[in-house]
Length: 487
Image (cartoon, rainbow, N blue to C red; front, side, top):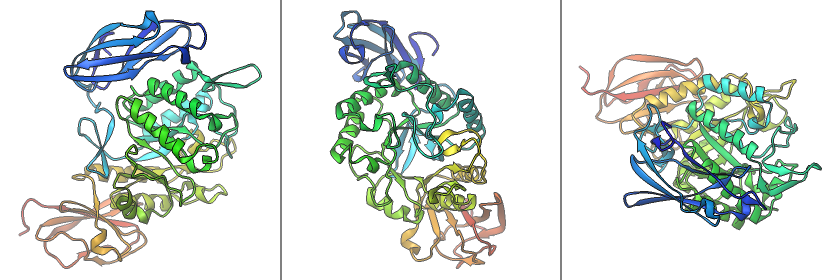
């Protein structure tokens, strides 16, 4: 922000006001604002930040001079006016991520975005030192999305008490779910902003079942109040995604399907910037109905990544298998696949026009497992996932699976026009003839997905019956059309 009333596009403008302290200001005082530019109006909730301080946050997405006007049932907060001049975005800032071309993503300014995410569920609930180590690791890792929980987590390898709690607590430890803890939310905002500076989308998980503090069993009214508060505080962060829950179906005893629908609708109604919205299943057969209009993309837990084309057909939306199992060695089957297997699953998803998620669960004497607490990465997959990200970003655009041409081949292949990315996994052919472009001269690269090497094949090809392959497993073929025919 250049000054109080001059802001870059997609940055945050914040108005701070002094107001009532009596009673429960979180519930008793209403504060909203309208921001108008020409014929367009954006409305947002303000929020109480403790100590008699109220805030309204605005993320302008269009250049020009906006007029902000507040509305409140408290006289001192009502009718406040400001003029906010929005100038062009800073270099490298592209705005929130949106759905693009039905199955894919791009930033608000049209810049393509390919999600290569990881999971650190409860990293903000660890010591400050461990949080800082996590950020340093992320700064050198290839991930551009991070799944993280708002609430602390009670689960195997993760049983510590957090430093800060999301709601105010009595001396006996009971929570007042009607009074959010501003100190906690300031820390959450700080970490989300730090992720943004690293180019990482914060996939914020709003509910989860792994709980001993009562957050999973709040009443419906308390859930709605918490959501409204979280939206008011966080929606001005351009890198926020909303994930209603991790493993929502493990909470159906307390939160029925109509309840989840109502929570989705609350976010849809009150988030002025329409950030991405999803929800995550636990049991493999319990996917939420991602065709519902308030869901922007399907977030799935399933190791059977070869189902990606079927999921695309079923939901007609971007597919993220954010938990296709984790690289590690813990006793649970979801947390002990090899790095090679996780890389394989990433390639299957990518070649099928979908996206996978990383996690790491290596046993640790301090119980500092990346998937929940962060810290340092120890595995073999993350660098190779970064290699795949580079290949995807070098391509001409997002991929469409070639399944109709070769559904029986057991090979994953995607196309963007005459561009092809073919992934062979455990298959090791010396030649391949399916899914090749017709009538178009092209060049061929062999990609070793584990060694992270790209080997150009000499010459050019056009209308060939088959292309040569090296006869090794876990290889990919990249086919790029040439502008002229070969001699």
